[in-house]
Length: 348
Image (cartoon, rainbow, N blue to C red; front, side, top):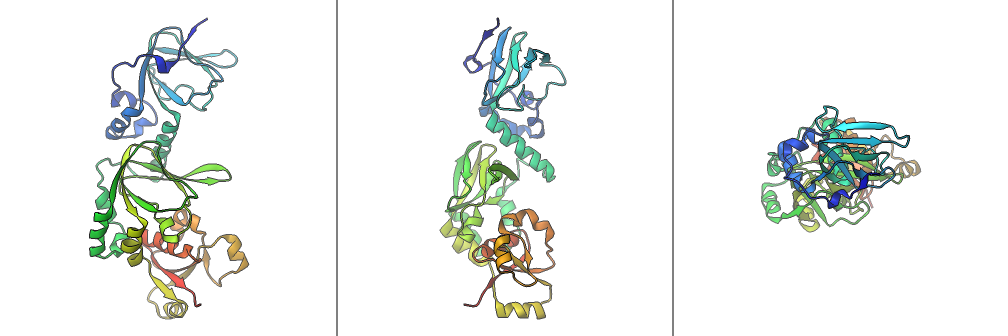
């Protein structure tokens, strides 16, 4: 019978290179710079001939990649699939589709391997796939400040406020896998990614659903500050990075106040009758609330769905938003995306 071995106990070999890692999915979609930043999270190790890498039915918090040598994967019927390090088909982690192994893995020659935490691999894979889905290229040289200052949102902020904002940001180093925002918690800060990558997710029917991938220059966490409601999503780093952090007090004074505009019910009538552009009333309440007290001729999109449904709206219109405290958050989201938005202030 083969000897069993704990791979984490085997001695590491020479340092991994970005070229070795980029042979494998999903790292082949990342730049050499991005992979080099991930290097501290990989573990290189070697195994001798006839050693058990992992057992069938064993839970494993790492994913393993074969660089050199030969490994046999045996299923529950003892059928063997042989993987060779130099095979063109060797571009995935070994038996990594589930956290509990469906195969046993046994070395058939001395092997060189590397491993990474399964949690980290999921974050990296998800970020890469989302960026591809939205046709967004990774740009490690992208300047966060340039992206922020040229956004539609900052076109609405007075220059004096921008100077103050930049002075109020605090720099914070963060790590791969670190949760920056937790869904349901109260918000006290917002963030801009100076360097690094992050994933946005939300719990739907007790399952975590991935919503978006964030990169350098992206602003997040502001929705809860505008609406004074709990965080509506979680943000987790999918790489090491640096965040620029702004407190709620500074955000309210320097960013929210000059960006969010209001209109009274009387002004709404004039806007509809005399405005140069079309006006749409947008209701961002929940469907149950809308059903209980509908607003005549209003378009309804719940606040939680607004970012994902922006393509249903037109920048040719002015959107007057109703929905209690959520209306301010919705107006901020629309303004940030380059739409014309006002918050409807109802008569007392």
